[in-house]
Image (tube, rainbow, N blue to C red; front, side, top):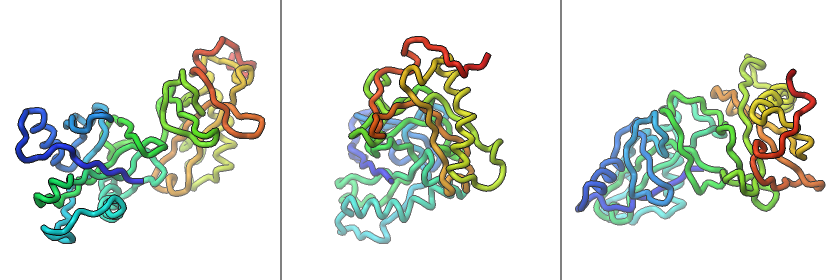
Amino acid sequence: MSMLFSWPVSVKGAADTAAEEAAAAFNSPSGTCLDWPNDAPQNMRPVRCAEPHTFEVTQIVEIGQDYSKTAPPPNEQGWQQIVTERCTQVGADYLGGKLDPFGKYTVGALKPTEQQWREGDRKLRCGLQRVTPSGKRLLATTGTAAKQDQSNVNDPGTCFALVNKQEVGDPVDCAKAHSYEVVGSIDLSKDFPGEYPSEELQREKTVDLCPPVAAAYTGNKDLAALQLSLYSDTLKPESWAVGSRKVNCKVGALEVDGTLKPVLGSVRAQPATTSSNAPK
């Protein structure tokens, strides 16, 4: 999924320094990292890629050859198609020719507003970003994307909302009802140094690798006593092919009918119980 954002401030006639800085950020060159609050995109600013940021510019693409000065702007579906056609390969090239379709990054773009379009702006600012499961929010990342592992893992302590008892939603405060809590991640490269291991083989290995991670995160709490279970993600062949090797270890619970059960509070905040399988 690609996400499109239009710039809410006209570049021409910027009246104050903040607006001028934001307008300049909108036209940043390839390799620039940008950040803005989710609820205030007009506060866009360039930041060092080593700092948390929302968007990393991969290339500014000119589409004027396909749209005359009097042509109306594409509709939302048209913009999505343009981004897919013009920004996907750009993003892959920026990452060294490899883009994990199930990984951390997705292709996105900053498009001109209708006013900018009328004024002749036909530039699409292609970039890479991290999108939440709902596709409605962006997550901050740290470090330039070209040097990052693309594995779609999350920081320990990240909790995901539960939607309709079946779907994993966006990150939420662990004090609220949630589906899973990430306790850490594991690297499968040492156990599978060669060809892609089936998801079944991955799960067999994560059964051994995730418990120590969970024990370290929870303080050796007995998950069964807390009516929680330990799960892990798996990697698809397409992810393995581009070098992704890490997966999340996470805790959650199931109802008797097999649907996800809402969990309240972090496992770290639960009463102390020592697992009988804890290392001694």
